[in-house]
Length: 282
Image 1 (cartoon, rainbow, N blue to C red):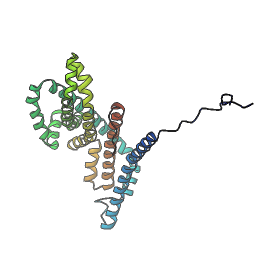
Image 2: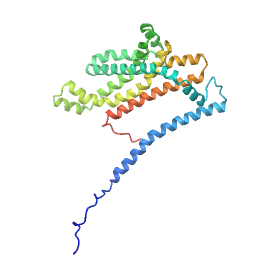
Image 3: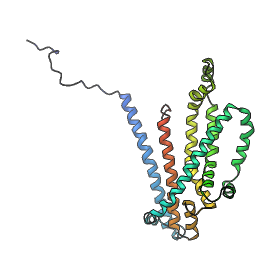
Image 4: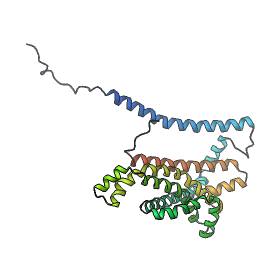
């Protein structure tokens, strides 16, 4: 008696061969992920090696430019002081980032819905942005004092203009056919804004936020240069006057790390919010 295939006991599910196209896509995606992680690390390592080589080859004096090892020792030895001064700078930069970007988004929304106001005030905003930051800072310090308020305001002003320009462009660059469809469906201005304009503007907005994430730290540091006793900006000035180049470079590294942290947070938020945005193939 022959045994039918039906009587054969089933020991497990059959293995379904993986789709070659999916495997190729997954491998390419993995390569892109590693590329985004490895290449920046190689760039930082290369910069440190170049820094060390220039000092060694040209015999640069320590009070002009310390070695990376001396800066690393200072970062460890004075980590408590550096962190104490980093906290107020981070608070000023974060406050300016939130204030400047929220104001830019609100004003961009008004400009898109009222072209007359845009034509009147956009040139004014452009002229105000053309004033150098080092010229605005003393005026704000005279008005607001030496507290955190002028530093937050300076950081907000640095963030404001790029976000305003990109947000206006994103809200206006809506597909005309999609806009016509929303009008045919009798959508209100609020529905058009939240369901069409805002979604279209998000990639433009996050492009500006990435710029603002690093610029807000610069604004806070410049504000501390004008008038402050604590903060990374104040520490940079004190280290410069004392010819303490290791501490000067350590403070610069701390401010650059803070900018990088803000940039990373904005990038992660963009990936979490804009999930429909196509991934770059580069």
